Length: 119
Image (tube, rainbow, N blue to C red; front, side, top):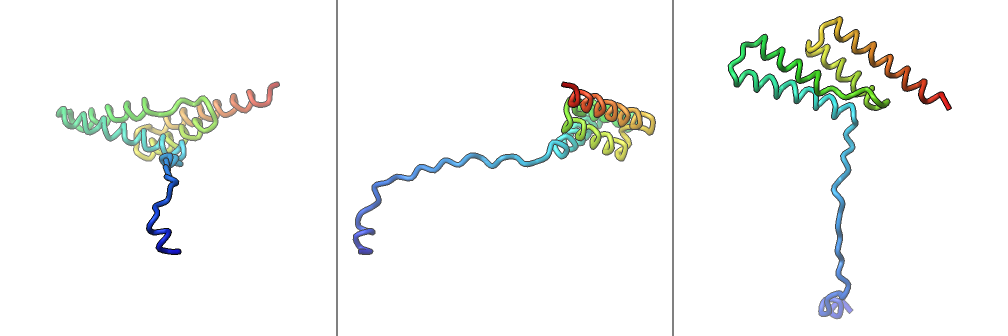
């Protein structure tokens, strides 16, 4: 019986196509990485152009702020809050700017909640 199986190759061809694995990185993690990467890219670019450290930091801070997600949905608001907190830690935002952005996120959450309750 074994020789019969070995002597005759199977007639059925198996064609397996696997989809690439789904990216399970959360939106918050992606936003944090994107903001940090943009900060680093801008800082390195400023350094390569010969700008002094304060100007390079300013350029990097602007890039970080521009990379932040819009606050148009609940996951985006969560991502923005995480980016704001990371920005405060990295000293991209001073105390006042960070507070204002966190307040803006609070307002965006309340508006989003009001939209959900109206019918």
